[in-house]
Length: 222
Image 1 (spheres, rainbow, N blue to C red):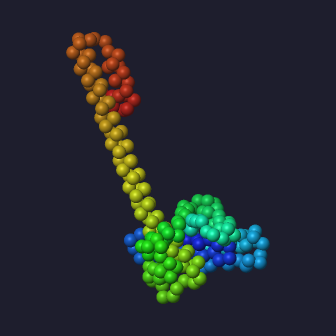
Image 2 (image 1 turned 45 degrees about the vertical axis):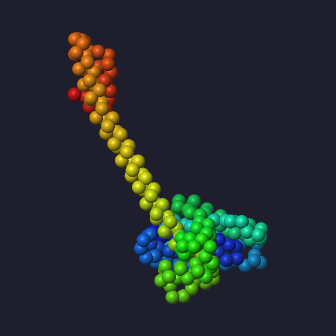
Image 3 (image 1 turned 90 degrees about the vertical axis):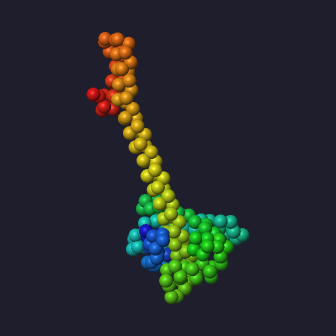
């Protein structure tokens, strides 16, 4: 699985691509930051993020996109800018038909470090260890994007296996129920015939006729 992690922001939007499966070593594909100057109009900044993010999607062709889920902060302007920037990877996932996951910072920290309250330095250190990096990804937005991607590979892989197991189990149950219904059809027909004969009937009893029609419909007529 190849995942593009996005740590949204207007001034710095962290992006990182990680490849691998849960339970095995992960590989860094690419990491970087999309920057926009605060002096530019908002719509131009959003366009820059969209254009560069599309380049990342085109060059790295991820299987899924993971974005940091918004949470309450004190600075309203920061919340608005992050929310506006986070909509860009969400729309990109919708356009390309890619799975989209939103992970809270505490979910990412817990998945990567085992502690939902870990600080940025601890998260960065674990990202380096997991990906086998010699140098710290900078700035912190880049490391956060990689942590998002790692989190999704590990959590998303487990969720996919669970969903697959549930689907397989439901399929097996449906096939077993259909098999039981098919086996029951000739038994009901034979029972109706036996009862009719025991009563000394000559022409087909309505119950026999109904059972025979049902058996024919199920492809089990004798």
